[in-house]
Image (tube, rainbow, N blue to C red; front, side):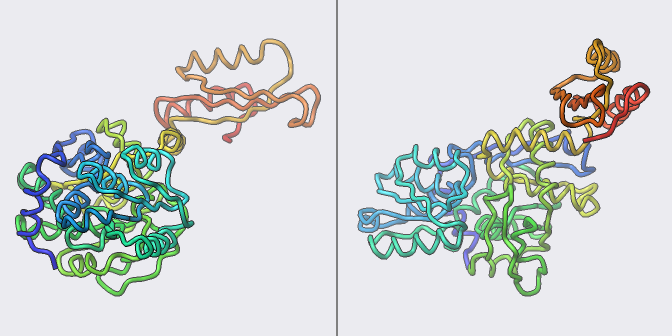
Length: 398
């Protein structure tokens, strides 16, 4: 099991190679959640993620002979970028195996650091099997993304910085994929703040520790916006640390992660990928566990595909009522569209999109169907807009 001294040594080893990222309070999120929220912004790292901490420590410890052999790893994106960047800095040849579902942005950024990227497997397990076979064939050093004490110690420098900068804390909440970050941070936190609650978070489809502290369960897997923690089975070495030091493990739904991404963008002005927002998702899902406590949340990564971010923000606006999609049966005569636009404008709504169908969607040739998407201030304003239009037209929510 790694020790606090391993983490302190890692911090000195990677100093100057990895950013000491800011730890900042967030009053907006504190008001919404009822907790005193502190954010640690590792989305500001050069590769946009905490993952380069572990990669930097692991590669710095390789012997000259190991560096000559080159390295290989498997990752859904962030660990890949960390290995690629630090291998390039040290002049080490790197091969990165990534599952085929990996977001395009992460694949492109990994290749941009000079590594050879191979897309193989429909999930992390299949990609790992391919990486292991290639490692044997080419004689490379395998840099495991989480089940490695040197990687775990590097990730633990995250908590070292946080606890030095944040002052007293009641709770630290951390996402769990393979467990490298949580295990490293748990060792540092227990040494520096032994009284602090340490809580792990998993997404529903990949909740191997849902019965914590009991036996592991086999999660269902599947699609998730938190692909950075889409790991079916936690690492053996991280699990030993987590069972000894972690207070609780919470499971959050996809919708909470989407809401958390939106709140971080709007309230904290921070771009977060799905995995990076799971800690806030836990606070939103289980508010009673965190109310009136000083809570540290890591923004572990900001590598989210632009299209996925845009869709997430729109879905959140629809979910909380600030985007209103209405279908209206209207008479097919001149001036009707102008009347509807005027009613929406006079009520303070903003028309985003309009679809007008005459031929196939209504029972009468004298009628038409109008679908209109409207931006509202809040859910109450959306209800008022709907009621105003319903005075004249047949209206239903799409």
